[in-house]
Each structure stands twice: as C-alpha cells, then as structure tokens.
Image (cartoon, rainbow, N blue to C red; front, side):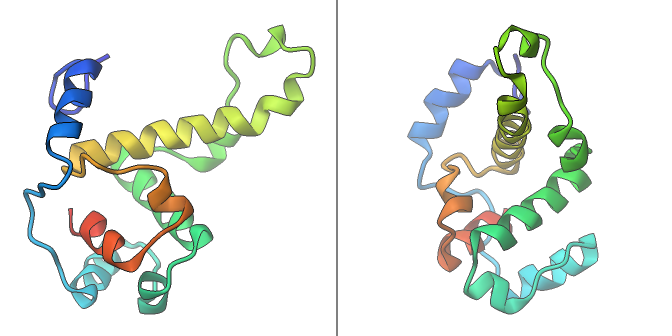
Length: 137
C-alpha cells in the first residue's frame, strides 16, 4: 500500500524514525490554531487545547478526518470486515474494527501532514505543547 507521498509502508516507517524531531511547518500560536479550526468548521475551545482531554481531542480528530479524508465515524462504527463471521462472537469485535479504521486513518492524515512522530498517545494522553505542534501541521 502506498502512503500520501507514493512510497511504500516500509519506506515511511524508516523515515518516520529518522525525522521524529523535524517539522517542516511553522509552529502556530494557540490563537492562530483556534482561528484555523474555526475556518475549517471544527469546534474546539481554547481551554480544550490548553487543558486537553482524550474525549475532546478524539472528537476534534474525527472532525478533521471527516473534513480531509471523508472518514465518517458513524460509518466506521458500523464497519464489518469479511472475516467477522469467523469469530465465535463477532459482536464483541464490532467496536474494535471501527477503532482500528479510525487509528489507521488518523495515522495516515498525520503522515500526510508532515507529523511523522504521531502516536496514539497523542490522543490518549494529549499534552498542550504536543497538540500545538500537531495542529500547526
């Protein structure tokens, strides 16, 4: 599978490790990020950026995924993959399939944005300074 720059997955992974502390974009002020988010139609407050919670950041990432990749969390929560019927209790895996689709999409968006060191920790344990770098991209 090819990434946003046309390279294969292995090539992206090598570069991600090599460029983990480099950013090819200016770091914006919180005020500028809020203005950009508002222009994009994303709902986020200054407090949600300065004192972020996993729930708020997840919702914001969902909005960005929908905007830039056409990824709908409603659709992903209803996703089924062809092997679901192989499970003894497929209903136990319905949430995880949607979650995996979300995780894969957010990683793709971050790579395409130039954030090569993004991890799910940035959503699960969000930090203001780190979010400023991510949303500056």
